[in-house]
Amino acid sequence: MAGGTPRRGLRVVVIGGGVGGLCLAQGLRKAGIEVSVHERDTSVRGRHQGYRLHISPQGERALRACLPARVQELLTATANSRYGYGLAVYDEHLASLPGPVLDDPRAADPDKVDAVDRVTLRRVLLAGLDGVVRFGSRFVGCERTPGGGVLARFADGGTAAGDVLVAADGVRSAVRRWHGAHAEPRDLGVRTVFGRIPMTEALRRELPGTLQDRFTWVIGSDGYKLGLMPMVFRTAPAEAAARLWPGLGLEDTGDYFMSVFSMHRSRTGMADGELFALDGAALWRFVRERTEGWHPALRAALRSADVDETFAVAVRATVPVEPWEPGPVIPLGDAVHAMPPSGGVGANTAVRDAAALVRALLAADRGECSVAEAAGRYQAGMAGWATEAVAASLRVAKWSLRDIDFDDSALTTAGRGPRREDGGMKTADRREDR
Ligand SMILES: Cc1cc2nc3c(=O)[nH]c(=O)nc-3n(C[C@H](O)[C@H](O)[C@H](O)COP(=O)(O)OP(=O)(O)OC[C@H]3O[C@@H](n4cnc5c(N)ncnc54)[C@H](O)[C@@H]3O)c2cc1C
Image 1 (cartoon, protein in one colour):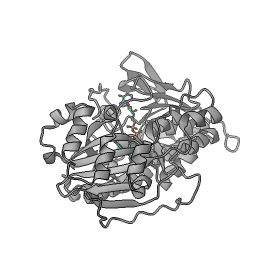
Image 2: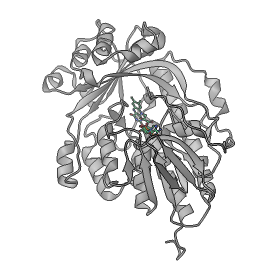
Image 3: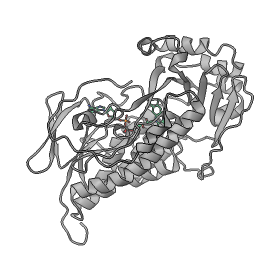
Image 4: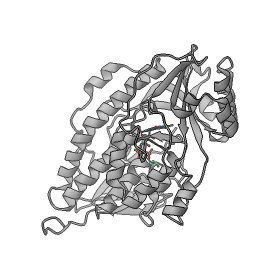
């Protein structure tokens, strides 16, 4: 209650239990707002989306704002313990190259959360949300209800009613397509092979210390680039759960590097369909063949890859970021602002959205404004920081990937006003994420 005013008892339906949707659910529960999350994946592991997530100071603040103390403690305990901040840039023979100076004010903070393992993060974000999250619940369409609310429909025949429906269903958002008329993220022409390289004792002995401590970016002379990002758990997840949240299933995966091998699509030597059909073993052969003349330490790292954990993606971005017409259907995260992973800011922007949306919906729940006003206020802020984040990640992509298919002029239309909402009911078509 605020100033003795009764709360309105808002009910929020979130589509998508990824980083943004789960962070939002935690924040809404902490604020005393009823929420349900509907996730199409049948389990927490879900699809391939990378392994290690960089968390910026802004992202860390947003997570801290949304998470209850006990969940935050678990997140801090399982975060990356190392990370000599900054970026080390080399050529393929490990000769140092000039690169951007990245600073992080948290460098000396022993409790900083500057990188996390994605699956561990998802499990941590699920902590305490029993009964709130429904897995295997794929959104297929939605309709407005007479009271101004929303009724969501799912592939299994289920429905969920709420005063607000949040589209947190990622880059291929079915809610965005149902909502209509919003630009699909653009293919930037970059293809990336993501991998996971266990940090074995043998590999630790073989690799120079700097490669183990920070984000390494290798610019090959032949159009191929390799990123290596170390993930060294502060506490093994299972041990942290046993101490802080007994019964919570956190799995140990061991320390590792996330590897990112990128190139323009014209350098893959094959059609996209063929690249995306390659299995882990074939993808690693693809990477190793293209790095044969590279420094032995880099080849040693690539030889140690966990082949089953390898996948290829096409890099996309939403340009421009456009707010949706303020109403009960509200977008969050990649659903409205996909960006290249090169900037390491997509998830950070999604949790920033979540923290802001919690504040806006809390005001609506307290009767200080309508849902539409809350949506408008949130989206005004979101469009600003998301447009900046997309632009920043495109700048990093242009520097690090060099030959991307992207025309800067597209950015000049960013920040346009909201589009009109499509009142008709449509059924979302099904396309799998890549
Ligand atoms: C390989 C890779 C590496 C990355 N590295 C970083 C990084 O280091 N730092 C960073 O900040 N960002 C990074 N990003 C970007 C980041 O992953 C995304 O920006 C972030 O996950 C967006 O969060 P989200 O909640 O909007 O979407 P997601 O996390 O993608 O979640 C969307 C969820 O919606 C679900 N869903 C989809 N359709 C439906 C449906 N019809 N019904 C129900 N549920 C549905 C999906 O299964 C998914 O769980 C990376 C991305 C990739 C691909």
